[in-house]
Structures are given as structure tokens and as C-alpha cells.
Image (cartoon, rainbow, N blue to C red; front, side):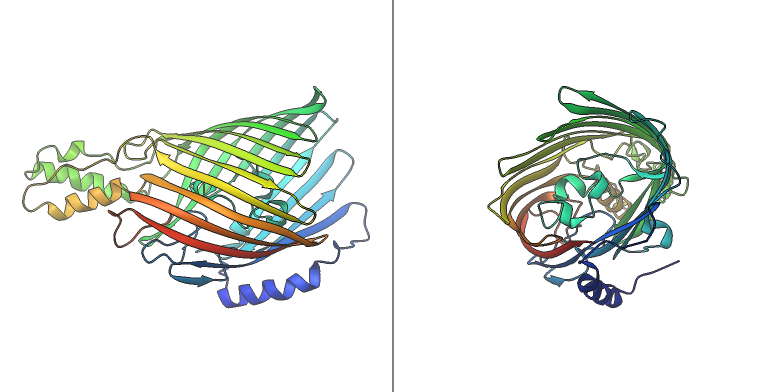
Length: 411
């Protein structure tokens, strides 16, 4: 397994920035195309309790500076066997726990396109769950220093291994596209209590999309069955069943906590507008789980920016919120207090109550290099800090300020 040394990671990114921003690789072949991207980022948060992070696959940090969270380096390779057959792969280097060579492959698929309207792809692909699915990690391709955490953070992966069918059709001065896909998805999760990986198998989805030179509309739906036979929460369910046998009446009905063999459904919609200097985008998602303690939740954001020559200031609002109240585990009789406390902690793991206000600006200093600065004020409700792992006082409302500065480039 490849594990990235963090100091080497930052130094390598910094050195690569200056050596690769000038031009794309000249391969000397019409069949081979190589491009890349990267970000060198610095972030600071004043959080004393919460571990600030962009997604559930990151460790996060608190009360200080961080050079790793925003930084990455990516490489995309396209090889055209013919006019109808193409191979695409994208490699991404970034600092997350247990990062392996397998996870570094963001995409790796064959695409067959017999005509301009239809194509079929097989391999590892992005699932178009949101507007930035194809370039979420490409800092140069987005307005902000980082994606809105409340919307993108709860989804720790945006890809799958499987098959995809796509159809494209000119419509109303734009292009209408629809695609269906199916396969297997793995969600890497990290917490202070350890790492885990959740597999969705089968996982399938449908995407509808229309775009022209100004507008982009996208609707996405997916559903997947969680396949996690080694789910550690099964031990908690077993302990509660045994507790009822030894005197805690109703303990077995508190669960089940396990998410194995349950279905997860995800619906999202997005709109973007870009014209006359305005850069506006908004997305909304609804996540529903059959698991007893995985709360249904709404997440969304609205971003508005305006371009003034090479500088684009922006403002953004984002939020994620569980649709039900926090689940409270009933008090336990003497002797079962510790088990009751564990059950309550686990019940709180998926509860969300968080929103942010962001202000920032993008400055395109060169054709392929941009600088960005962004300030975020984030409010976290009691027990609602699952994204940031609020510790040691999750029962209190609190707010944090975070400043991010990035240099993004493509080559």
C-alpha cells in the first residue's frame, strides 16, 4: 500500500507548481493526450473543539495552520485507439488517511462512442452526483478556494466501478443528455475512533442534464445497497440484545444500529448560470437511508460571483440539516450506564446541523494560474457537527472562522 509522507507531499507540490504550469505535455502523438492540475493551499482555523475538514475521508485539523488539506496534484491521460474508442484515466495525489494506489485512480475506463449521440463506458468513473463531479478536485476549474463543505462534505466519494450508458441530443439551442449507470461504490470514512470503508453494491443511478452557453441544469438520482458484513456496529446491537436478557427492558428495541444490508438513496439538483460577468450556481440534495439511526438530511448552497477583469469576488451560503430531531437513547438501569452512553454516541454520529457563510475572491494572475482567498464562518448546532467531529463539547452550539488561500494551476 502506498502511504503518502506529508512533508514530502507538500514539498513535491510546491516544486511541481513552477515546473508544470507553462504548457501541457507534448507527447508527439495524436493518440495520446496528457494534462494535469494542482493546488497549493494554506488554511487556518480558530476552532478549539471541531476538526475542520472538507470531507468525511479527511482527518481534519484545529486551532492553527494546515498545508495539506487543500493541496493536491492530478494527472489525466487520454489515449485514443480510434475515432470511436478511448481510454481515460485520472490520477490524484492528496493527503488523506490510508491513501492507497488504488484510491489514487479517480477514473480508469474505456469509452466506446459509435456516433455523436450515444456512448458506453466501462471501468471506474465519476457518477455526476453534482455540478462539479468531473472536476471537484480541479481547483482551477471552480470559483472558490474549496467546495462548500456542507454540500460536498457528507459524500466522501464521487465515483464507482461499473458501466455507464449515455445519450446526447441537441435541444432548444443546447444539448440534452441522459445517462444510466450501475456498479459498485466504496465510501472511505475517517473518524478519531478509526477508519472504515462502506461499500454500496449494487449501486445505480440516473442523470438528466441540459446545457447551453449560459445555463446548466442537472438532476441526479441514485440508490445503493450497503454491503458491510464486518460492520462493527453489529457488536453494539448484539450487546443491547444481551442487555435486555440481563435486565434492561427494551434494550433490544433501541437498535438496530448496523447499516449493513440497508438501502441509501440520494437525490440532487443543480443549476449554474454564467453570463455578462455573473457566475451563479446552486445545488440541493436529499439523502434518505433505511438505517434506523442514519437521519434523512437536506444539504445545499447558493454561490454568487461577479467577474471584474481578472478578479471575481463571491459570496456563498451553505447548509446541511437532518430532517428529524436528534434521537435520544432512553436512560438505562444501574449497571448499563456505559452501554447506554455508547449507544447515544453512535446515535449522534449521523445527526447534522451546520451552516456557513463564505466570502472570497479569485484572481486569474496567468492564463493557467489563479490565486484565491476565502473566509468561512461556520455555525454548528448542538450534536450537529458530524462533518467536523466536534470534541470534546458536542452538546454546545459553537462557531468557527476559517481562512483559506490557494494557488491553482493546470498544465
